Amino acid sequence: MNSGTATRYGVWKIQPDPDGLDEYVVVCVSEAENGTVCGLDSGSGDMAAFVEWARRHRWTHPDHRTYRLVADVQMVMVPEVEPL
Ligand SMILES: [Zn+2]
Image (cartoon, rainbow, N blue to C red; front, side, top):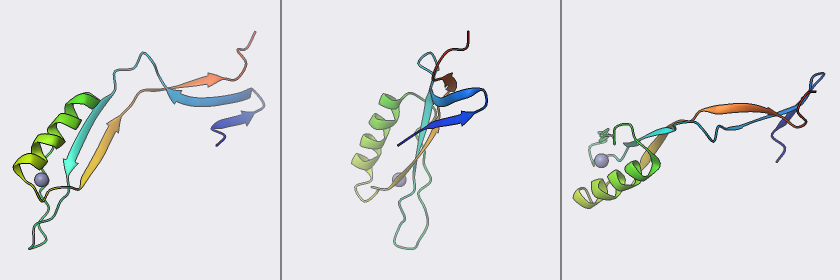
């Protein structure tokens, strides 16, 4: 996959900022038999926090196995060749 974008200013790509403070929220979207969605979420935190939250949530709600991940990830544009 080519993630670069060629412009008259050169080839740039967007990538996660290694110095960014990423935050994630995982939302349980499992449905009860009557079709209602659980909707409980992990709250904002790092990746380890939402993984642990989902593990514990499924432990207390054995049928809740479907989740949606919302990621707030800082990105940065990087030139393929640094301008002089
Ligand atoms: Zn749930």
